[in-house]
Length: 101
Image (cartoon, rainbow, N blue to C red; front, side, top):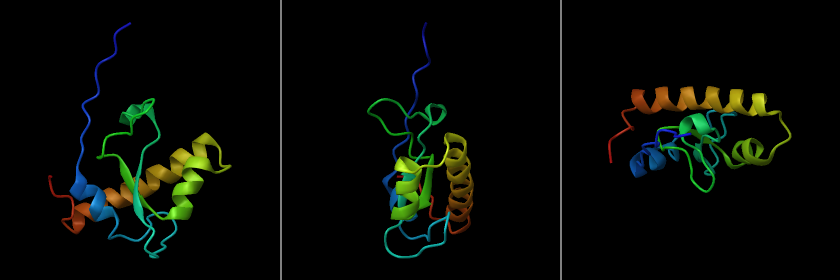
């Protein structure tokens, strides 16, 4: 069975812009916020490859760790990430920080 090849977007400026934001899950603004990539295949996540850079949420160290290694259910993790992703995307657009690389 053939699957369409994913076109990955890599955008260093978008990733760097996420570091300027507070955590879009808990609100922490403690210098640990990074771009947390989606962990789902529908966004291009695969074995040994991160999802496309267009699918990132600004999360602090603790929220990012909870997303990747936490005890929440898969559905809870996805819901948390999706809420943070929407907030991140809207904020980057609003602040005009979503420049093309």
